[in-house]
Length: 166
Image (cartoon, rainbow, N blue to C red; front, side, top):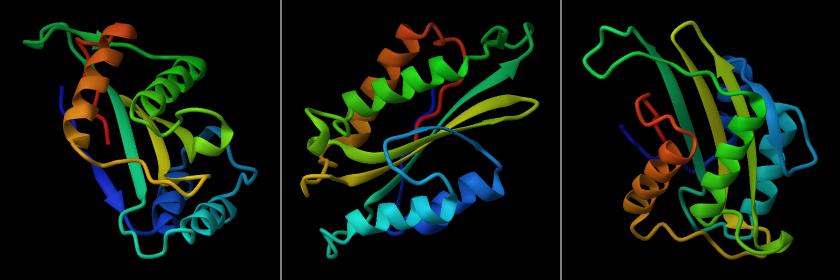
């Protein structure tokens, strides 16, 4: 399993890239907006609470690819439902600290999905700034991320498929 973290200072480019350029379908969000322009604005409004902080925008991508049975890792053609992708994303956000506690201790996020010939991708765009103004820690984030993704691979029985986070 491969894992990589992408962080950005602005939400505008990332949200528009995922929803407009990639044509991803918005699966779920805890924000009121539904268009890429309005979602980006809503993210940026909360980001203004912590204007000096950098890299507040995280873009997490989970890819489940297709492999032929002859591949040295074995075949893989796992397609998750929208609901299972939503559950996977929520579990990831909870375990990484983005959705801890009640409503004001949660981060803004959106979950979108793209489907291609060779893979299905789940895109999560999430803010490190929580609604109460606190920030999700990035201390040892790669190690925490790897641990969480390994647990999700087991929980969703996709350890033989490629699951890439961030």
